[in-house]
Figure 1 (cartoon, rainbow, N blue to C red):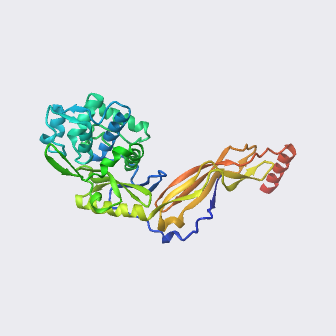
Figure 2: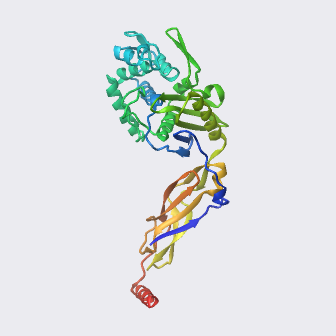
Figure 3: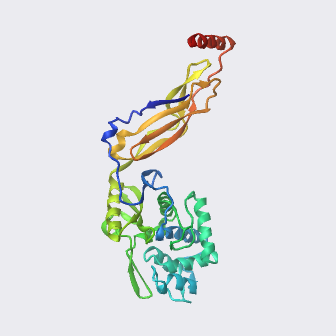
Amino acid sequence: MLVRAFIFFCLLCFAPLAQAQDFQTTASHAVILDYDTGEILFNHNGKEPMPPASMSKLMTLLMAFEAIDRGALSLDDELPVSEHAWRTGGAASGSSTMFLEINSRVRVEDLLRGIIIQSGNDACIVLAEALSGSETAFAADMTTRAHELGLTSASFANSTGWPHPEQVISAADLARLAAILIRDHADLYEIFAEREFTYNGIRQFNRNPLLATMDEVDGLKTGHTQESGYGLVASGVRDGTRRIVVYNGMESERARASEGERLMRVALADFEVVDLADSGVIVGEADVFLGQADTVSLRLTQDVRVGVHTRSRDDVRAEVVYSGPLAAPIAEGDVVARLEVSGPGIETRSYDLEAAADVAKQGMVGRALAGLGSLFGAN
């Protein structure tokens, strides 16, 4: 029999669920990530793979940053601009470009700015060809590396984000990718906050609209295709707390800018990470059948924390769930139950609960008496 027992943590004062109002967005996909804990504070279709457009350039940049770290590239290296890079991503392509000249050579540091600030497709292809020999091979390497990092929704077919059925990643994984760039490549991450870059005599401005309207924002990357709509990966810091916002599917640049500012302001002001209980805490007990004790205490095997909107904080719910009564013998440390945590805007999470003590099986006399009791009870 499946047993469910509602519990509550002392730091929560529960209010009626009817009072809670889920935060909403007009984006087709959206995620708010707490940088320090990795907790997803808000999720709207955030785990569904989506076409990321130029937001996938963040993975191209990570590949370049890692190549610099291991010495395979340096900022002063000069890389050749192939005909493919020029024709597919240059001025002739009609797409976002750094305006590289065919058969020229360009410094890696300039290429990074060309991707981050100008969203240059030609710059992406130059790096891809230098690192993997071809853009196709580089896309395969991008996918492999993304999966190694746990970004399992990612699949890349090119370095630029150009529309392709196999070019997808979830908003949640884009947020995690942004966190990796910020945490592991702090020096190079500073480029994301630069407002403009001039190359080959052509001045272009950073496409991230929040850099102009919010002092807290210091990155990252826009994206747009007809298929994906307008999207943005953005990060901002207020009072030492960093949040990452990812959203996609907006209908216009203006809608992207206004929704991005709204999401970031809410992310920095109205969401919080709540620590419910620490690993090792006893959160309940389970009934035991044919044991030398009638119950066994249940202990958490990991910390429990959730990200919530402040007005939904008091509506977090927790239940102990197990198939019971548990049959003795039980050894301390056996995983015998789970804790399910849910609430408005929270995807239900499950945490293992282990037995906090040994429970030996009853002897023959005890089992016989229990059997007789059950028999007479049935009559």
